[in-house]
Length: 141
Image 1 (tube, rainbow, N blue to C red):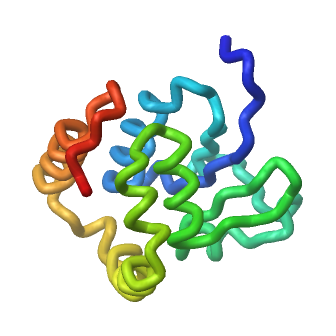
Image 2: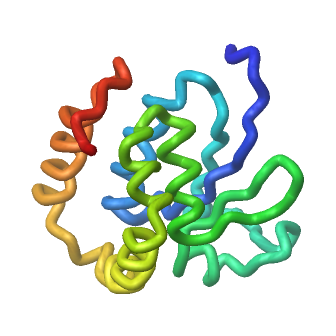
Image 3: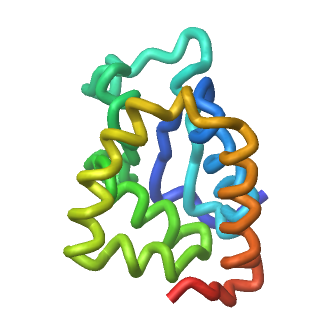
C-alpha cells in the first residue's frame, strides 16, 4: 500500500479501448499513488454527487483535485502525465501553444475514440512506453 494519499481522482471511460489502454498504462506508472482512477463506464456509476454530468465526463477528461476543484481537458492530462512520471509529455502540455493545439484536436479524438483500430491503439502505447520507460528517462523532448 502506498504511504501517500492520492492528490487527484481521474475519471475515465473504461468502455473506450483507447481510454482504457491509456489508463492501464498510467495505472502501472502510478507508483507514487498520487492518482486514484474511477471508471465511469462501470454499471451504477453516478456522477450527480460530484456536481457534473456523466455526459460531460464522456466529452472531456475530468480530474478532481483533493480540494474538490476540477481540471478538465488538456490541464487534466498535464497533471495525470506529471504524476505518473511522463514529465516530458507534461511539459509539452504545459506549453501554451501546444496546449491550444491539443485542445483543438481533442474534441475530434473524443468523437472518434470508439472507431480507432485496436492495433493502432496498442502500437501507440508501446511507442509511449519505449519513449518514456519507468526509469523516468523520457526521450521525448
